[in-house]
Structures are given as structure tokens and as C-alpha cells.
Image (cartoon, rainbow, N blue to C red):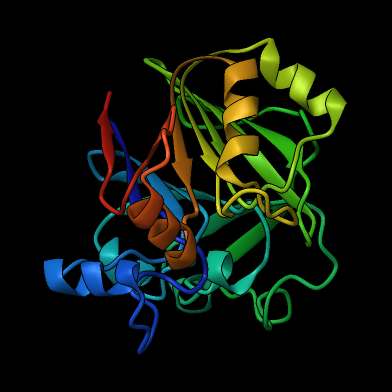
Length: 244
């Protein structure tokens, strides 16, 4: 079993189309691409997706069984891949926070996808994995996920502008092996995403062995390349994998 990131960027990706900033040029020179944040827990031919923004999900996992999709929210960069995945010959369960509109016509033309509205802090199971939705502050109703596998406990907290006291205290009672948290903005910018100082404070308050920053944008990366700030936790890139 492994947990792997298909992307760890914001909706613009890196490099941004025709952008000549230091971050984008650096990626081009190295032949790298980082797209919208999306994780996958994979055990041989069984897959659980955490977000589904990659348009080619149906191709990436052709021949594998998608046991479930856990959406943080219905913004396009986290749900786009479902537009094609819904034509799968398999029935696929998609767990998501309460949302009356969803994304595009996904609710109108469900096809092979069963949409299951999650309840904050109420566990559900996919095979041997126990998953707990935890509300996050964002511009659209959003939940992060606590992921308990037989070998490790993860926190997947993307598209997060903050965490309400009740839910932060819930997270603080958990012993995490790994926590991945949104750190999209350059300080002191605040809004619907955390800056890396805010994300550091949250990680410091949690009982986690390893913390990581995700949902990075090119402007934030350019700031880091130019200023080399001392970061307590690392930004990870597409392809980052933890073997279990």
C-alpha cells in the first residue's frame, strides 16, 4: 500500500500558461509539471482517490478498481476528473461535503457515480481504511479527511483557510504519522487558503510525526526561490509517495 500525490499545486498549476516568473521558468527548464492537488491511496489494483481534479483519472486508473472518491469540495480543480470517470463500467462511490450545486452537471447526470454526503466527524469505511471528514474554512463547503490505514494515520487538509476551534481540537487529539496541509499563500496574505506561517502554526499544534505543505502556487514558489525563508515544513511536489 502507498499514498501518492498526483498533484500538489493550486488550480493554476505550475508552470502557469505563458508565465515567465522565476518559478514557472524553473519548472520548464527542469521539464517538470505540477497540477491540482490530488492524492491516491493505492493497494495493488485497489484505489481510493482524495479529490479528483485530474482530467485523465479514467485513463490513469484504467484496469484498477476505484473503491471510492473522497472529495474535499466541488471546485473544478478538485472535481473535473469525475466528468469522465462517471462513464466507468464500475459503480463508484463519491463521498463529499454537503453541497446543493456540486460541479457542472455531475448531480444531474450521475451515471456510474453514487454521491454520498458525508457528516462532519462521522467515520465511514472503505475496505480496511477508516476515513473521518473534518470541516475546513474555505469559499465553498469543504472537508478535509483523517485517513486511518492498518499501518498509518494521515491528515489530508487541503483548500483550507482555517479550522474552527471544535474541529482543530478534534485533530489535536489524534496521533498522526503524516499531515498534509494547504499552505498556498505568501505571508501575510490571508483568505480562503492558509499562508505558510498559518499552516506552520496548525501543524505545530498537532501531534504529528511528519508535516508537509501542499496546494502551492507559482507566486508562492517564486517568493520562496527569491527569498529563501526558513521553512519548518517542506512543500512537496507531484509524485511524492509514502510507502506503507
